[in-house]
Length: 208
Image (cartoon, rainbow, N blue to C red):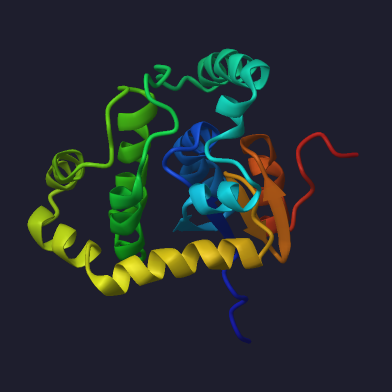
């Protein structure tokens, strides 16, 4: 008898996305409880927003939505016991850590690297798009920082990140976080549990 294929969820995120921060800090533990593997997929929201005619986040373009979002973030982070500091610059550029995260796919330290980048942005209010910031995280993880940075800034990885964003568009992604599970797309941190339940083949919490 053949083993069944592993249950899997794709987590598509942008390091500048505040709600992606909450999902990034929750997904590993929740996925483990459901027996689901997590595929971390960095991409860039900027080109997607530009395709909508936006030059920045809708939380910036729409003042009322932005004011609500920061209050909601404080509530949500308190709910989940996550540190939170409203970023003084939003949305922050995050191309460099996105390239590193893409290069690191499949490594044991990939998820932890992503969590630390998010924490730097949304728990410590620090820039993440600098070699110094990324080097600091890699060194904390015991990873050869200079080598990783060199590889992550290669033409091949730059191309892969562009292709990754194009793939997100082709699959219908319009915001972050977005999850794909068993052929279905789920959008938003508030759909993480539903996406994991779908990946696991179990009824979502609260269903009858």
